[in-house]
Image (cartoon, rainbow, N blue to C red):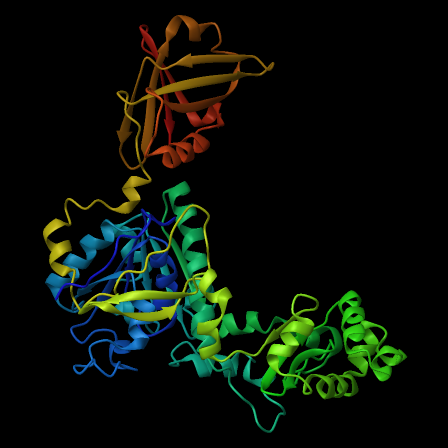
Length: 511
């Protein structure tokens, strides 16, 4: 059965093709962030599929247990191809895909990709501009050999080793892990940033890039406060419950019907809060007059705040504190579903089920917004659904990378060549013709008037190339042409080659 979808607005990442070899949470989360915003993400799965397809939970009416909530949430907007990369034919087809893609993402244990013949070095031979992204527990040898490099790792292991669990809970005797799979999600978020940065660099230089996130490293960076506390004060931070070691009131406090959060950092907010509370022991106690004093006396202050907040319901506290000090109710997921902010900010996506137009899945939305660009919310792929599409059309489906290597043609564009003289002189010439030469690199070759150029040939210090549309109007390649114009905006004399044919001047520049 073919998955249903609706036509989304174009995403800001349209024109990026990603081969996604990752599974479970960290890698799929990274590629989901890209797919939501228009990247073409092709999920490469074994015949059994990503194990998250079987992880649950399942809707009651999904009798065949085809659609796990775990899988649906992370793999919307993607395509699926089943390949056995130990099979020669499948591996050969996958290598063809590599040649027509921008990005490859994997989250296998170190060594797996090498054994498949798909290491960064091998993949970059196939596609010299590929961006190769990797998530693992402890990283590869490329950025420093970890003694744990061969250890398997999941979220709880990274939370433990990276220090997060040592900071979470009420005391050292009863440590707690953070509820969501934060090591996976944070690692995936960091990798998505690394992939986009690498795409920019690969397009600028024409060279492949390897980007890696170790989950252990990611959690250390998340626990940055503990690092400087130990360095500055030789303090080993311990669990603070719902409080903060350096600030008060800052944490979670009781209400009649649940809990609320207050975070006072600046004295200005403290002055507002104490006037709202308006009890003598808060208004007139000098022990709470500064940030340092409030931190020093935080246990006593937190007790006083708690005594006040538990007199009110969460709704009443919203009226008293909302918008006046940093405050928010502690929401459960039912309350999140009802929150107007969540609806207005489109933070719960509705995704059509393959078998029903009426019923829709609801999953967490994408928090990254781009003005003028929409987010996709297409049905996640049936296992292997898109293999025929790519097998049949691979030679006609260009790498999305090619779109961003767009080469303006004479029938549509003019090329203006501006020579900047050593004495602030300027000579502007329109190329009588121009062409593109493809070898190991791509070169633009422009021909200009020999007569006009000869008067200036010994005076210029730099050259600027600029493409303009012949006929004004909408240009579907405007952004790409602007990028090309930027790259060619200031070329030194050493960057260009000048050939005098005795009829015209040929100017060659590498793009």
